[in-house]
Image (cartoon, rainbow, N blue to C red; front, side):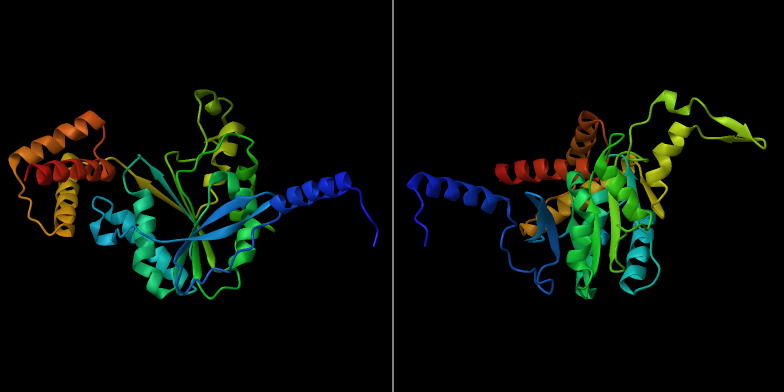
Length: 294
């Protein structure tokens, strides 16, 4: 065996160490029978699915003010679980109104029937084909969730998602459906100048080329589900539900009082938003202070 100089050996060890850092981690395959959700974790030139423990116990019944949205999403997910035609969905609208919560509640509702979820960050959408390959032969149905998604024009991940939704070579396998949440209806920023250049064709106004490009991604989702801010009455219903839930978890009784209601309204004014998130945040503050005083 050839004798190598110590400095050569040291250099080879450094090279091997660098190469080892680039190689994918040795991980066990996910046991989807026990694991209901996973995140895609990037590593060097690829990545891997990392199992996560589902700690959010939100149920569909606990989501108020979004009855129509729940109905559409539940029906679509049931169709998907039955192997029937179902659509990819874009849940868009006002922040904190329950877009992400509906997807979590769907997982809690239908996990016993074989539904699983994979969350992917925007930057990792370039690995869609790797994710699809990892689960396409599994006997489960997967929701691929991209939460709070927005793009800037020209991003590579935008093009990858567009291709996956369009049924190209990057299209999702039969057991994967894509659900996306966003504050933007078309996932891209819109400017006044986007509307310049529209023209009439056969008496109808056609969108400008800029707007055509802006809607070209969102248009590939079969379902557009809109979410809007709550009315005051609906917001107070949500507050009541959140307070009751937290009191029940702590096995205490917290009365609904005029003071609680007025504080809840003031809290929404301070937050400039009536929505489920605001109701949940207020309930944590109120319940915490109430129990501390006792």
